[in-house]
Amino acid sequence: MQVVSTVTPIPGHYWQWRQQSIYYVKAGERRANRPPLLLIHGFGASTDHWRKNVVGLSDEFEVWAIDLLGFGRSTKPEWQYSGGLWRDQLHDFITQMMGQPAVLIGNSLGGYAALCVAAQRLESVAGLALINSAGPFTDIQGTTKPDPVRAVMGSVVRSLFQQDWASFLLFQYLRQKSVIRKTLEQVYLDKTAVTEQLVEDIYRPSCDLGATKVFASVFRTPQGEKVDVLLGQLTCPLLMLWGEADPWINARERGAKFRHYHPQLTEYYLRAGHCPHDEIPDQVNELLWSWVLSLA
Image 1 (cartoon, one colour):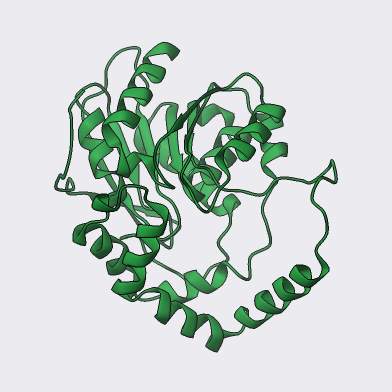
Image 2 (cartoon, rainbow, N blue to C red; image 1 turned 180 degrees about the horizontal axis):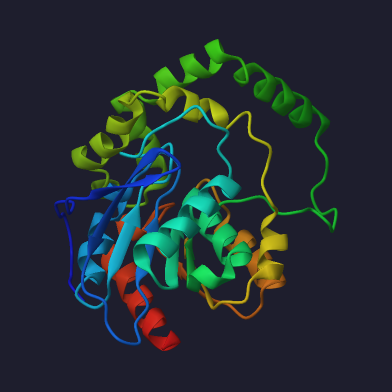
């Protein structure tokens, strides 16, 4: 397995899906008794966010990374975006392009999309690795105390940003390179990992036609299937990697929820923020390498 630091992304290709262009990259060679890997980025990211992992893992595995519809270099139609849409995209990609069940590795939103595939399209998935995975849980225990003020404010904010002008203004603010850098520095424990290249990789797709509408869809799409329901449907092996310094996710608390609903998982807590695969790639690559080989 290669040790990586700063690497140049591998040139990619396009696949046509539902009359839309989907960008992907592929590296490495398929090996007997080793499933291919499919890397799935988080909200606002792309295949570029996995460049250190594609390079680091490709000497041992066939590695693919894909831009979800609406992100990266994939087209950005004015559709309703959801876990179900991305589930179908990923399932069709595995079926049509990869040709055999894959180990899905997803970060944040990409983790939720990967979980949807693994739970609802079982035939496509040989294993599932989630890195600071997103997605809603059902509060069936009633453990969350209602906060009426926050509930009202949350409703007001959602209603406000369902309006085109408000979501447009917010997007224009958030897509500024200075704001992107500040946000990344909040969610990366190692600030030196926030490079000009990383900022540019996040910024560039925000200039694409349709990017504003994709952003707005976050406030308009109903929540997808709950994570606990999906975990109840899961039959493949599950690896959880958590960056403990993630300010957006309480890793220990969320990890306990995953264990509650799916006790037969493997998990590691790492000294990193929301994106350990990019912040500490060598450590993440080593854990992924060892775990995937254990599945054979």
